[in-house]
Length: 136
Image (tube, rainbow, N blue to C red; front, side):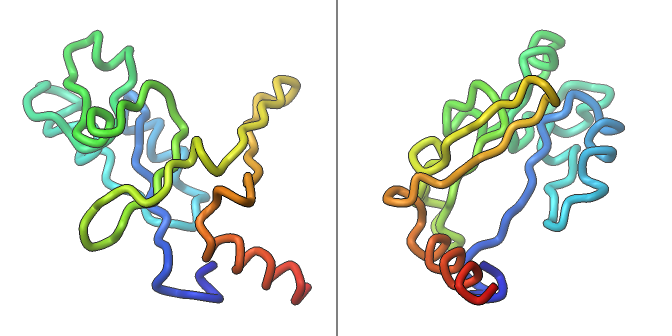
């Protein structure tokens, strides 16, 4: 999508790992930016539990006293991973991944993959996918 329409979409990883060390291990190989763990999980999340963050806070961390993050609350997130397409200016949700992605879990290798439900996916994503497939 970036090659077709550079300003269309920006993927940002919002961490939900319980501790910062696990977050840093997850993001090493990701090709897109990530919100800082402390911003996602809350001010002083590793020590004092003051100040809710912006992301989704897992049940284990909430049971330890960490407040649910603003985006976790706003979108009613109960499990991760989740994908939302937001308007970059207003923050309004344009697409919910539950409506346009089908999750496939492979328990043999503990991996989750996704496929598009084409009629529900963001049109620019499908156009970019079709363009790159035809160019190959």
